[in-house]
Amino acid sequence: MQKDPGFGWKCYLVFFAIMVVRNTIDLFSSASPVYLFYFVIVAFQKSLNIIYWVNVFTTVFNILCLIPLFLYVYRKRFLCPRVWQWVFVLRVIFDITGHTYQRVMLKSLFFSSPKFAAWAVVIFLLVLFPSYLACYQYAFQNEKIFPKQKTLF
Image (tube, rainbow, N blue to C red; front, side, top):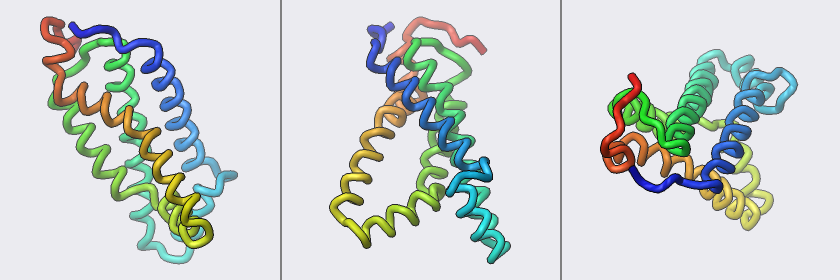
């Protein structure tokens, strides 16, 4: 088994979990601008309901990706790698197709302040990159991380 990922990964796990919980609350809380955005677009055009559901699935897969991130940080093996590979691939697909509210906000930010918007994109990618790295390694390099450890289920 490889060396323990350390304190930095544990801090990132807490930070990312807080971020995912916050995004989940924003999507479902009637007091948030994100909820209001989806409520308004669906009120004007019922066929745009699919955009809301894609964002719901994006949120679900981000929540599910907390599991392999946690397991990666604490070096536990759970379920077969094929499950985590599918979760990872679906997360990528829904992250690309989802986040409509964030995409619209970023687009408007590019019109008002392109430099600030570019920095926002860079920071956003830097914040997400470790979660993708850990989930990818957990899903696709499972044997490297856990050469002799048995799967719990």
